[in-house]
Structure formats: structure tokens, C-alpha cells
Amino acid sequence: MAQFTESTGEEAALSWAGDHVRLINFGDPEGKDWLAANQFTVIEDAIRATGAPASVTGAGSMFLVHMKQTPPRNYRDAYPTPDESRRLKALLDHLYDEGCSIISTGTCTFSTPMTEAEIDTLVEAFKSGFAKLASMG
Image (cartoon, rainbow, N blue to C red):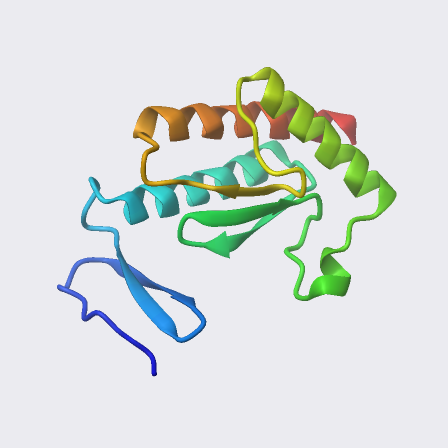
């Protein structure tokens, strides 16, 4: 049975996993859901601004960076080509050099103990990494 939290009239979005539905309250800038969703959007914006051949999928605090221009729709679409694997490795190496580490598949999560400072550091590392990817071709 799906669970749903009613909106308070503020801008909000739904996040679901299995049979559970959550409301992400964008009107609460102190809330971790808002912070994660906002930074997810900033990462998507960085991809567009740099022209990097990448896309992001996910919801809430968990997302996956794909080295594909268009977000994949299924497993077959998501499977990386050798060139996409090379670009992902370059991005992972760049993130590591910037003091950030994400899962080797390009998966990343924002956790409750993270503050805005840690998330900002990760987002800035992604931005500069996407710029490098865009120059790689």
C-alpha cells in the first residue's frame, strides 16, 4: 500500500521507492531532501553548461552519473561502451584528485551527516570534472 504525505502548499515533489512515496519539501531549505534534490539539479545544470557527454538519473539523495548524452531507459541502454567507461574513469580520477570519492559505477548518495559544505565541494568537483570531459571529446 502506498504511503503519501500531503503537501503544505509549498513547492514539492514526490520521491518513491517500491510501495513507499515521500514528499520532498522544497520550501524547507534546511531539510536534507531539499538540499539533495537541489544539488542534483545543480549537477544536471553543470552537465548542460559544459556540454559534457553525460546525464544523471536517480531520485532524492541517490543518483547515477552516466557518460551518455541521454539518460538511459533500461539496463541495455545503461551498459557503458568502452569510450564511456574511459570517460567515467577520467571523471572518477578527477573527483578523487579533488578530494571526493564516489562508487566506481558513477553512483553517488548524499547522506544525512553531510553538510552543505561537503555537498558543495562534491558539486564543484563534478563541475570541473564535466568541463574536463567536455574538452576530451
